[in-house]
Length: 351
Image 1: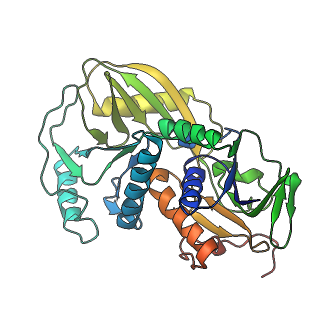
Image 2: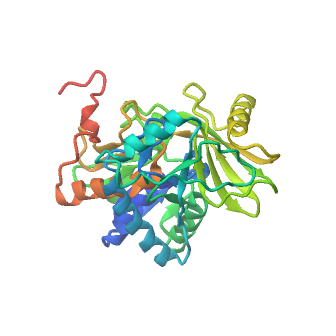
Image 3: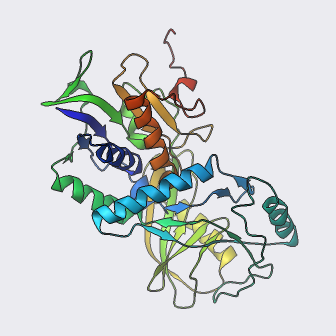
């Protein structure tokens, strides 16, 4: 018997798996590699919504939990995943500068928005109105994280690379059985793949497709993350990750010409040097209409749970949301109503 079956091994699944293991629980993880959003994500963590100069929900709490989570995981796997790095917001007008300074005076934003204008000039970028600096930022190398963690799960014989067959799930009063594995609980962390789930498919995970580039340029010299209409993340060796688009209609993980042209247009608004596209990726983020995760327990089965809807901020939200769900299951903690799945009523279900 294991304590938890976990379906999905992206950021949500890894976060819960590690939460369980750190509390001496046993796990069995299933993943079919069908969801690409965690793999190709920019991996940025940023406590501010730069489009509107507003605070991310519970950003400070998430950052504390996130930092501790990745610090322990790096020590465990002897690899670095968390790369602290400044994020600069390029200003396109005096009005944007003024809006920034006004936001930096607000109580919730003051710890994260520097009131000091960044005037440094970067080769390949025209910045007549300079930059604002966001504090406590950086990125997580999600590709390395997923690869390393899956290898670790292989080493402890705790992962199976196969599609989950919901029809093979046997639900008892206090246990769950699946293809010879008996577990106390099951946690679904499938991202946009939740729409195939007969137990939680009613949840409003409205996938948002994002497309990204890896570009290369000998003329661009940038050692910080630049974030305006797109982000530009330096990877080293004259290469940069650039993204991302937002498409609410296309639910495939295939790069498109439309996405390519949109990214090119936005990049050229920011940099004024030559570059070449080295790679073009796409994935569908598990986003939710109210921009809050979906955490909780099934209304009929008290040993069946879900961790989903991390959206564009999976590296920040994952560890905190996994802890929230784990504390609910093991310690009876009440889940915050803003993220509890109870805020969503299934169709045709009588309460």
